[in-house]
Length: 327
Image 1 (cartoon, rainbow, N blue to C red):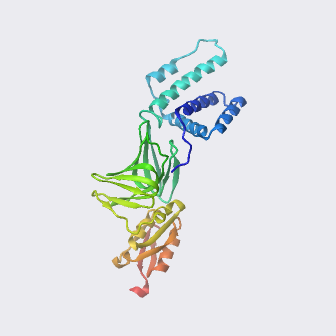
Image 2: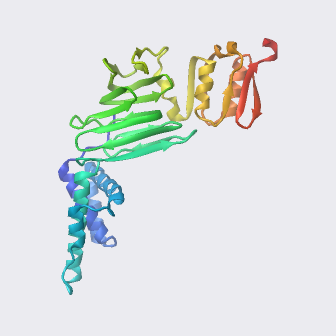
Image 3: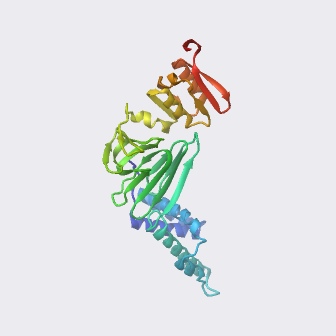
């Protein structure tokens, strides 16, 4: 679970006020010092200010669109020959109106919220700090869609694998949807892997409620469970949370996994086609820890453990064959 400090609405309002003052006079040393003092007074102030900055950035796509209150604010023009300080106040008020509209409607705390999509390619990993203080870590070839609003926090795992470290908020449920299964946070850190035939969940901390079409299960720290695409809960053999989340440290850990499964996992991280023409090889078992970015090292290590040899047919095609003594 996240240890980030939580902030209340009053602190968020103060953060917005400080943000507008700084944007109006970015070179003013007194304002800079006052903001620094306010941020240092409480860790929650820092969280509130980060949220205000993120929400301002999120509003960029909407600043050119037409809304009645926004248009009214932008049409306002102060009378000519007004003092410069007064013009700045007027413009600041208009900016506050625009930001207020954005926060009320499209911010992560707004009524409608705003959707964001994140993705990483093969062999890449990325950590995203979400607006509520939670974190999202994406493994290779992963895509997620995030939609937060005033009432709920909703994430769709489109493909791949992600680790969630959730900042618990009973008033705004945190839910992850993956096909026909939903995961509900009860204050937790957990891994979700969308595979071809099932969705696998591994809970590192706290509790996750896993809900299928007609059944609900709760998983505690150290537990794993899968849900098949035909609507059944499936036990995960040789459950090992360390192995399931080793990718976060750039590793793959296998405990007696079938060679065909190991090659499929390795293939997730590299743009290659790894083939096993001999069905007997597919059932060989692999034990070991490997670095995800080192394809040749992984394959050579497997070849030293098992009676196989690695044959490169081109830059993107690899065949595993029985070693000469096993033919």
